[in-house]
Image 1: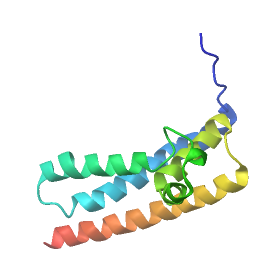
Image 2 (image 1 turned 90 degrees about the vertical axis):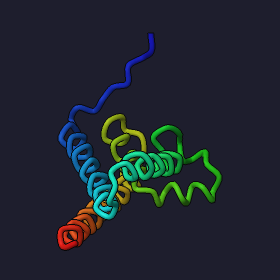
Image 3 (image 1 turned 60 degrees about the vertical axis):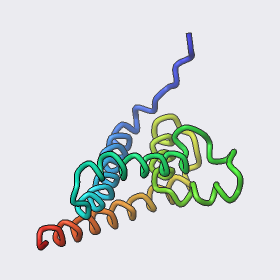
Image 4 (image 1 turned 135 degrees about the vertical axis):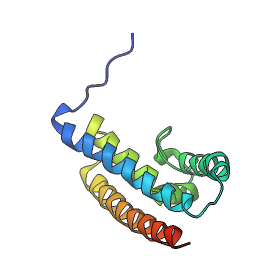
Length: 129
């Protein structure tokens, strides 16, 4: 039997906030692209699959960014999925440093604000058309 990983239940509110804000950030980003596409199958079959592949390959959910070559490490640290993953990893199982996570959380909040503003702008543009 595998050993259990102890969750940090004292950070439950932060975990919940990370999940909700992360979902919102990705929803707004992907919605802004969906508003530009006129056919559902183009968005669902092509754009979603390509964007998931690129985001997952260049981020840290499945492997540690520290083991990547330096050129790919730079790309991974520019990816909002890395920020989101690192923040959730820190508040759930305490991997990472508080200073690094603070910067990544702030960057993800900025990503959330920019993606929601862009989605609102694209929605207004789509409604006008």
